[in-house]
Length: 302
Length: 221
Image: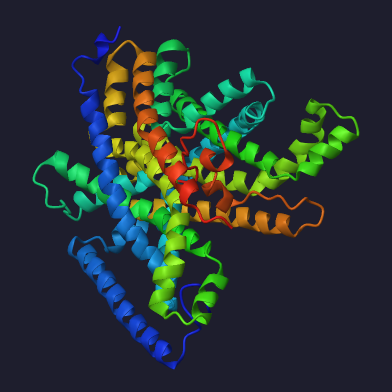
């Protein structure tokens, strides 16, 4: 194994690495032992606190409905944000300045505001100005906040996806006499959407994580919110946090793996133009890199 | 028109946001760089630890981590972070949570920066007889550092926005104040605009300056 930082290890380096490994294992073991001791001191290792998670009641009453609501809000947000993002992404590439600039301002504005502010605002707005019932309001507010933010992020994804296509695609379309709209809808968009798929799936991870905000701040009954009801019922705060964290990790890990599988598959396929937007590209999607007009460079994967 | 601002310390709330951001940024830069060093080290065990840490922490919502620092660490394990009063404790716990979370992203940014340096650079450095230390100091790190600025700027901006999550454990920063103002005052739209503008003012210059710097310093290949 050779990298830019070090050579393939020789006998001396191998000995040193082995020594470092031993030291590191001891350090980790110490930390684990310390945490274990602390848990034991506070009586957090008692089986009775973990036992509820082996019963079906904890899952059917609390965790699964919570997870269901988390996924529902995430899916709704994605489904609404995607077409909205496409519209804004295409508008930002318009030849007309009066379309391009307002679209750019809107996208950059919503990208530089925290999702939580959007959710809080939407929640209050629905409460005062619309007839949304108070049971439905948290879902509406969470989805609105997520849609506004993620549509602007997806707008950048769409733009990057279209810009990643080879120039020849547009030129060939013009050469056979297609108009600008036709070129976009029948040549560029279909290819860009395929190229964007991995990026869109990894954006889903961000959306799933952000739904948790709605649970704590505006009372949407998603996974983190039902966790507190569960913990109040069984008096197992630490344990419920551990289980909920594991559920989130599993869901997001599945999504991430799916995204990278898609990316590999698309990169291999012979039929595409080779333009693929993966998770790595998402991290670089700041306007400074793509040459946007109003660069705030809000990162999208966090 | 702006008389609704009276009685609320909006600037103070944003100052809290800035403090949270600055402290967490420094902490996560240190911890994240350490993690990145582990992830690119020749010791397989350290590489494994770095990978596991990053993949676990990245997939947990920040809200879960922040809430856990308060409800788990403080309430059950009695971790007070050396603070006597509740407000200071919440602030320090939030910083701890942000550092633990953001470090994973800093690690990935730094690692991707190191990975942009082509292998040929190190090979060429060795070929002209530079020692390991010289290779690292004169050839690899200067290029890696320049490539890292852009991605790190993105992490910083995201961190600024993420500090609003501290409102979940009652730290009196911008989102926390906005929540109480928006519930008690009539001018919903204006309040939203004021706070949105505050964040635009905080994040826009960071993105512009660091983005420009990153582009300027980038190694042209």
